[in-house]
Image 1 (cartoon, one colour):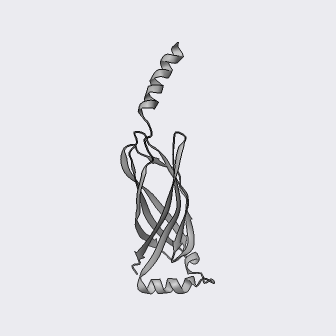
Image 2 (cartoon, one colour):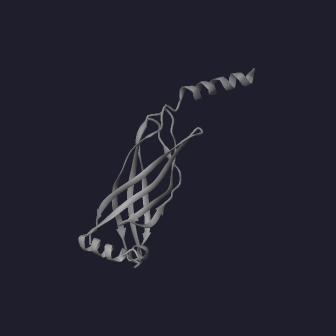
Image 3 (cartoon, one colour):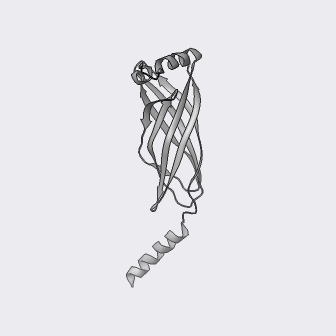
Length: 154
């Protein structure tokens, strides 16, 4: 009998806090060059969501690829991010790109395209991959594919 008394409030709590729908993916925005040194280039962005549910959850990146001028140069993988209940929120996406990976000369002609970009003072940065939302055994994958021209300040 005591077990039922303890279990009943827990059951009511779980039933009242339901997952009505998945969080709504709004956009990936604010792609910008954070810093550039001789050995690394740091790029950041924010993935924006709105959670209409009474309970939160967790979102994790699933190897989001970073492409500079259509050439993959790095991947973003991070720890799980806690999702707040009934709020809009953003997940910071930050990546460190080895400069040698960007400026190496290969068969795709990356160096020529990057030199052209440096002269024009902009790079085409693309984030492509998946974000995975998890809560109470429910999960959903959000595909990300965002391209933006990033201005370079020399």
